[in-house]
Image (cartoon, rainbow, N blue to C red; front, top):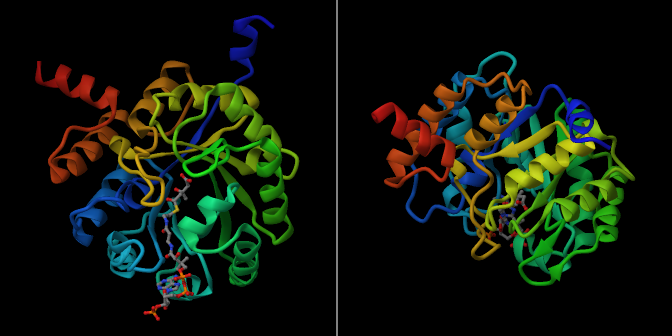
Length: 309
Ligand SMILES: CC(C)(COP(=O)([O-])OP(=O)([O-])OC[C@H]1O[C@@H](n2cnc3c(N)ncnc32)[C@H](O)[C@@H]1OP(=O)([O-])[O-])[C@@H](O)C(=O)NCCC(=O)NCCSC(=O)C[C@@](C)(O)CC(=O)[O-]
């Protein structure tokens, strides 16, 4: 197949879910005040993000940075057309989230047994038992349900993860009624063909429209993996403004691919995102300034240098 033919088959539009306020900030050592998180959500929606993962209703002993979940959800100024999601690992978290009226809840499992134990303190089979009543309750309440599948390519404790294990998890999630799934490369070890294999495994149970890519950039592969996923027809991706983040239970893993970098690549390829890159860069500067460090987005750094120059 010629390159021009394969590019012409890429999706013409991509939907990005910015996970910066949740995945991005959950691992920060110093507390980030609720009003700063609220300010970040505001700037992301002003930039045109239509889906924002705001916070998680998890144990504050496990992830102290998300202890202000209800306060953040209460403080955001909701904009019509924007969907706000939250992580809920169990019924306790789901029930706690209800007052915040999330548009979507996210259960989070792993293709790796060891990661499941470290992250949510139970086996994969037990996690499905915990998720099932959450999914049932959310669907009955008219709340959308997504699942994150961690370690679909590699695991910090088990090493390489075979696509069959991704297919197994995706099948279990489908059985309990989860509507769409994220194929996550939690520690960023994936390369294009491996990520494609994980997506193909997921395709055994979910259609392409219900699969999103969630690629951490630890090894600098996330944009290549995004392109590899696009080649398969994936058009939903998670990314994190300023490349914030990392999972507290995946030591050494850095943030998600920076939203700015994904938007720059997509716009350069003529793929629409509905996002204003300049405003997105301002959102990234806002949180990077608060954290007192340079953005991890190469595009943001380059464009800010150009603005200054
Ligand atoms: C899942 C649990 C709660 C199990 O934790 P557990 O200790 O097994 O839970 P438990 O049911 O035995 O309860 C123990 C205590 O936790 C409390 N508890 C129980 N549930 C909740 C809740 N929902 N909210 C608040 N508190 C809760 C419960 O009330 C009790 O409190 P105590 O009586 O000791 O005072 C725990 O392991 C946990 O909170 N884990 C969080 C892990 C996490 O947030 N990880 C990061 C998100 S995942 C991620 O980043 C990856 C992703 C999604 O981005 C994709 C990727 O890149 O891979």
